[in-house]
Length: 363
Image (cartoon, rainbow, N blue to C red; front, side):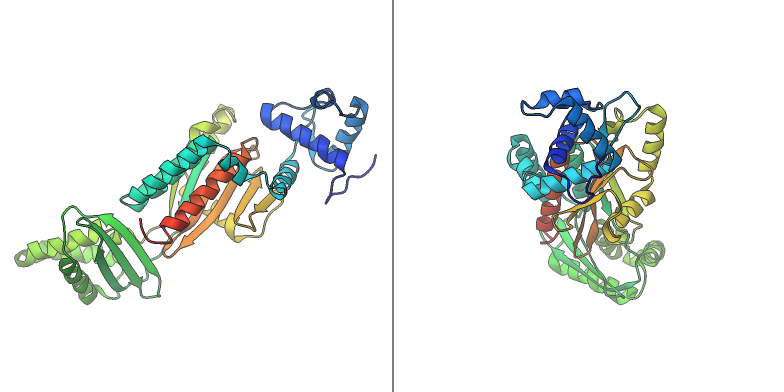
């Protein structure tokens, strides 16, 4: 039996492997030599196809669920196909350009993100778009930020009720929030509130500020109304929530129902609810060197992991983002048989919108 070159498949091997992938990704059942022979009028004989299938199986591109079954592609084969698709220029860009529903959904998402009143809404809308578009699980993670203490705080009036808060920490990190206040404030009132916090709380952590403000509201009855106005600005601007342990916004777990049996699905759903697990998983996907059965596309902008260690039935598509104080990852988790081109296009669109909206601080 001839050994298959691990780096480059011969034309006949590539055509037959492509046929297996097309048939399996469409139908989800093992593919036999007869099916492949009937796919194209110029296909080689079934005997030739069986010989090539055996070579591809030996090389790790295919496997047989049992002796009498056809072949199914391995993670290695899917990675080969993704790289080949990207090289041919028929990947995510083409999927988005040819699909009117996808374009319309992208336009609606952009409009909704621009109108979002706070970050939580932005993350939730993005994860919903990923899930609905790819029909898999959409995930947005927000990296943890650890408060080292307040150096300076500024408030900027955007409209009557929307305010941009900028916090500079003692270690030089900068955090931003744009939120809606319950009442209208002038820029002079916002400046007075900022001066109060800079004067009284420089060097204090946000948790310490929260405790001290509760104490002052109880003790300083004479100045209660004026102090309360400043506390309202601070709390509703989102500054007090800037210190966090990271966040995960996940939508579409129901799409995995047809992929796994009851016990496995229950176990996977329990894993999906572990925020720390997601933060580690997506942080590892962006910071570590590519693992086996992993493809990096778009000069490393997007990473596809096919067959996760503890979830071999699943693939994870991920892309990181970082704009000012905003950092995290965009991801889609789904079946190894997912519509990769559509999922890749969805991740790309969300990344571009984050760049446009977060990068310009126009949330």
